Amino acid sequence: MIYLLLSIFTSTCIFIMFKLIAKNQVNILQAIVVNYTVCVIIGLFVQGSLPSINEIIYNQWFTHALMIGGLFISVFYLTALTVNYSGVAVASIANKLSLIIPVIAAYFLYQDNFTLLKILGIIIALLAVVLAAYKKESEHHKHNFQYYFYPALVLLGGGVIDTFTKWNEEYFLKDTEFDLFLIFVFGTAAAIGWIILSYRYFYLKEKLNVKSLGHGIALGIPNYGSMAFLLAALNVEGWESSVVFPINNIAVVAASCLIATFVFKEKLTKTNIVGIFLAIVAILLIIDN
Image (cartoon, rainbow, N blue to C red; front, side, top):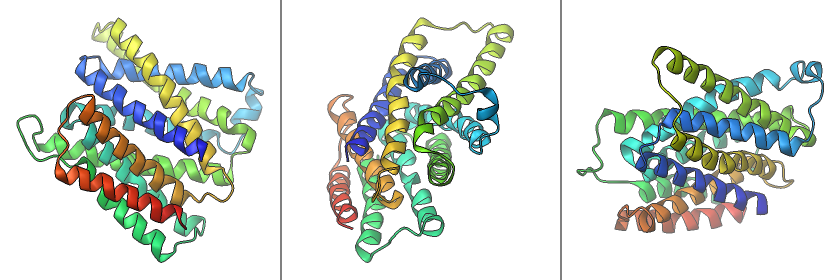
């Protein structure tokens, strides 16, 4: 349970940082690339030492880590754009509604146990996420093309990442390889990001901003933790992924909505309050199975 709670806490911190990045008009891409570089540094520190190059390259999960890394930076950038266009709550709902993809995958790939109460809990969880983060169209929340397009891509990308990560944890990763796996996931994302930033520096004359550096460092710490703790939670014996993903995601949505309300003064409607209440009900139903 402690790993799941830490995953929820660090994931919520990511959304807070995205809001601060948007609020402080920080260069999103620069902050994200710095963030992934910080994740690599933390991973190397935790790992202590690396095995030989041949051991890594010929490992079954190596190419998978590269693919997930490419998805990581893409979805992270889309999430930041969603926060910018639609606010913390909408970004949270898009990211966390993606739980439906790994949950469905868990039934077909890992034969997770699905009781009527668990199915009911998952359905309530989906409804809770929508209600908790829903915002009516207003002067500050225009429901234009970007309002729907970016969240849709975040939902799809987030679901693919969660499913692919669980698949690797289930079939390819040893307990001692989690940190090594994360190093290459984050390293791939960082490498892609630095290539893009190098192009923008030499051809568009865009310089690295000090604010981007600071915000990127602050984002990287919880970002590494969110993935490390989620992998650890998925590896706990007796915890099925169809339980971990719903609880993790709806708890992050509820926490993000409350923080958006009390810290960033985003208005919490009656609909949002109902959503948060349903999130608690959903968690109780899913845990009870």
